[in-house]
Length: 198
Image (cartoon, rainbow, N blue to C red; front, side, top):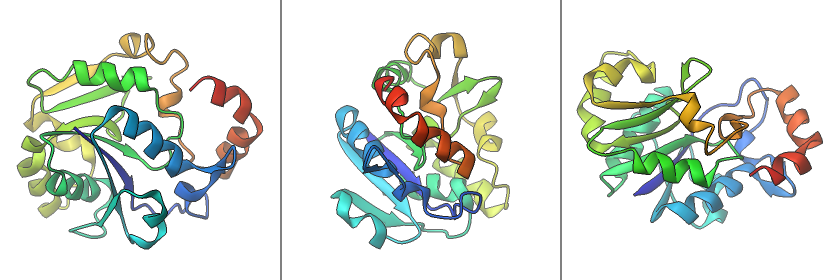
């Protein structure tokens, strides 16, 4: 399997590249890469520009279809990856749980997507996707229907309830992302507590 990080966002709300922000002296994206390397055979980054991430020592590719948001990044990642199944996450999720990732892999069976449901919402940027999703993703890209979850009814999905997720990530820290300056300040101010919870 391949772990794919989507790093093509503009970080408008936080005002700078959140993937390169540091927690405990280490860039957020480096924390994510290190964790994915433990679980997956390969790690791939999909970005607007490959230059920013060369220091990570993993393959970086640019969006095949630009300016299509996360759905475009998912399409590029699935198309480029040589793995049948791929875990896809955002570049602003530094507290991924290895136990949760391993549990999600165990839930694949013959599904096309394994997606967590947290607080009643789908988490498409912390999900496993099969290459079988590519035709549906392509259709929605061409239709300019760019909300990721909109193609889910067209493929076979395994929805993971929060009760099961909490067995592996009780505080749901895997889904904590750096979307605003306020969240960044909270993360930095509480980094010792959060780091212990990884």
